[in-house]
Amino acid sequence: DNKIVEKAAEKYESLQFVFVFDYSILKRFTNSFDRRISFIINSLEIIDRKLKKLGGNLHILFGDPTEVIPEFVMNNNILEIFTETDFE
Image (cartoon, rainbow, N blue to C red; front, side, top):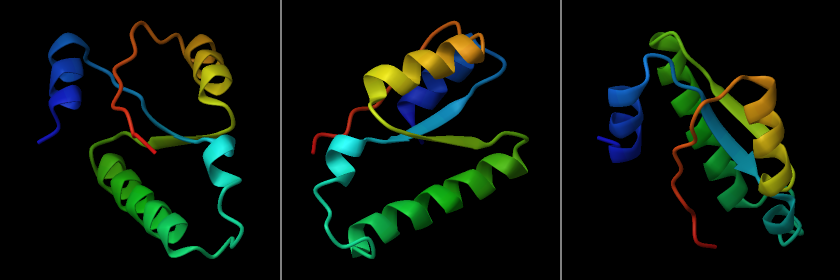
């Protein structure tokens, strides 16, 4: 159902799934109990449970994506990055 995942799975046997909570976006939410943040967290938990059933998991990172993604890539020997963009 997800074209990016299909494309990556055609090319690689093992995939790493990552979501980044970008601090520059999070700081706009003054209420830590904002329903939008709760929705995202609940959705990520569902995705992680589904991935665990398939033998994987969802890595959740916090910070500036331009910093935390390269660090994750280096620490996990990632060969290629497939992305979807969220336009805030």
